[in-house]
Length: 448
Image (cartoon, rainbow, N blue to C red; front, side, top):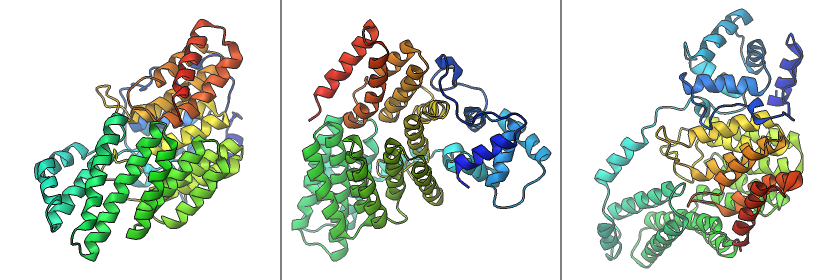
């Protein structure tokens, strides 16, 4: 049963018939309310449990009925489930692994997005830093006539580091460093290599080329980005690495999405999924299809693509480093859903997912680990505010999204056009609206 079908069934079973998705609120306070991070003393999963339920207009009894509708085996009586639900939502007790998976399935997401495991990222990085080589030592080994396993391991660590710095490092700095390391890695092809080493060097070059292509596109250089993407695809094919090949197709789908070629997105995603079976790239390819179908207005295909991606992501192991650009961390599934629900005009859900994105992408001290995701989440909040008539909040969110040194211009502009289109129709003569629209036009002018 799809999420939408289950929502409708629950709405009909409830004591009061409440629409699952309601739009057209008079002010933004009718949505989630509070600050962007949704500060609350309860565990994050408990606050999300309530947010997911209220965003759908469900009572707690409705939520229990939805839980039962998604279960593959018999559950206790509704009265027992309702008592459990109340304890979960208050944060008084935590669901066990069975119910965690079922709750995530009921709300159309993955378990680790709803109940994120304790991160060991910082400890792992400290350990890696203590055992890895310094840059000068890596370069000395690269210049040697033979390539040792230690050299390749150091290069793997370096490539992973670059990919983990993608979310927050300034585009110009990451581009410069990525290009330099790509030259160093490809220079190894002239050395004496075993067949396994040859494939490893091709794979490493493929990963760094993918990264460079992404940064080139972020900076608005479409031609260079497409050339680099094709080079990465060729490297992945020669190395026989389906992950590199899959992400090269995903980049093509992303390029097509931001350029308005939605059928091109679907074609690229289908080719990529066929090449990257059981790879994380396939999850993001499914999400890109969902985004394209949303813009084509086909809600059924959106739900199908999102559910396919959810099931694939649920089956994958939790990533070693959620900052790595070429893995799909479970929290990113909220990001996909946010985009689709915003396009579909389902403002309560779009608002709720946007706040979850900001929460999961921001450290407790307020430092933003994933500023590009947060920017699109703020645009979503701006769109929701604009639709409800709160122009002041819409402009504030829109302007905040355009701030910061780390931006993906094509994606940022694509989403911002939705907000600027609404505001231009409402009253572009208002000084604050006019100033924001001019700021957007200035930014858009720099994209080649």
